[in-house]
Length: 108
Image 1 (spheres, helix red, strand yellow):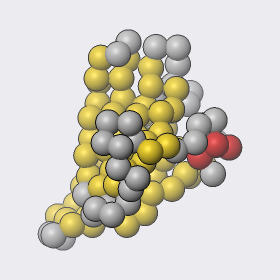
Image 2 (tube, rainbow, N blue to C red):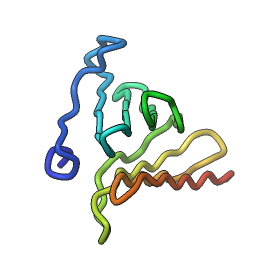
Image 3 (cartoon, helix red, strand yellow):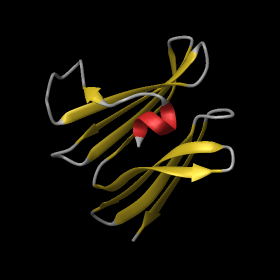
Image 4 (tube, rainbow, N blue to C red):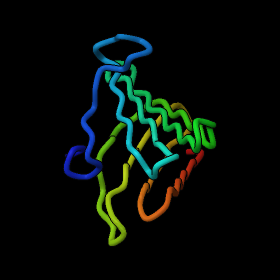
């Protein structure tokens, strides 16, 4: 799924070395990258988008209920659904033709 959509495969996160924390580095352009990490045990997900090694976006969500790849006409996107005490939401991240992030956070 990840390989066919983004040309990359999740690995164990280098920073933590924890087997349950996975990371995926998705090149957006020559100078841009989406760094996606998720903790399988604690159900948390983090999206970090950098341009020329400077962080542009850093979004962290807990209570992940779904992390998958979705399809659009413009290409693949990462879809996250989450639920925590008193809130729920959905995050969609597209890397092509340009980076776009839409996060819908709702109090319940």
